[in-house]
Length: 269
Image (cartoon, rainbow, N blue to C red; front, top):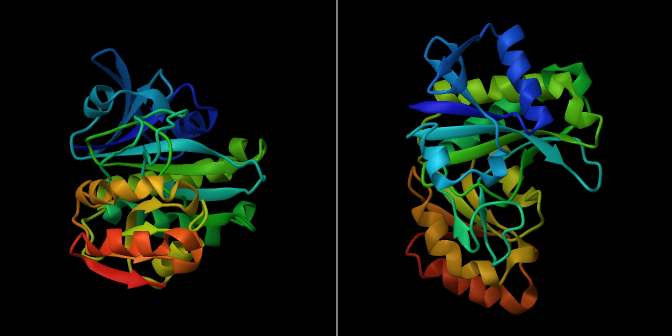
């Protein structure tokens, strides 16, 4: 079963809930003490706790094949954006949920479906003109052994309350639940900044579908977790793609060696 996850503790997530009910025609039911929104075979589970801090057991109780979290996006720089990403912590710091030095299971094909859906929504909605659409690197919780992705909208305070942003995320979440398939071009990305520009470009070109992405700021600590990033790409991993200019010079050889040791195709940009 695949399901959308909505959190009452996240105002943007609750705007997605409202869109599902009021625009897409979902019906509200109660199941095992939880609110569930349902339309045909698509369901969204509403949880009271903040999604970042849910336990692996909490996540497993939502769905067993794929969980798609509808979430807010916060940007210190005020970048208004529609984003998708996997979750996990590359370093020993776990300030925003999850486990230290542990990555969640994810699905590159689901990230691809969300990425394409968000780009389509942004291209057709006037109120989203100027919003950036793309990937974020793997970061924050929750930790999940069920494949999980985050689909987000927001940026500054006004953007986090955007009904157009909520609509785009709601539509993308439904697309993922109903249409996402395992990717035959799944990859792990290494290097670059938080918004992974090199990997967004490759996604836009259709070259690869990225699951986990290790950013420059988590190197070298995160390099030890590359085998885990590959193993927890549920649709299988074809390649490790390195943004060489986005890897600290002192650690480039280390990153290349770590990638080559996995026995996958290694692509250097």
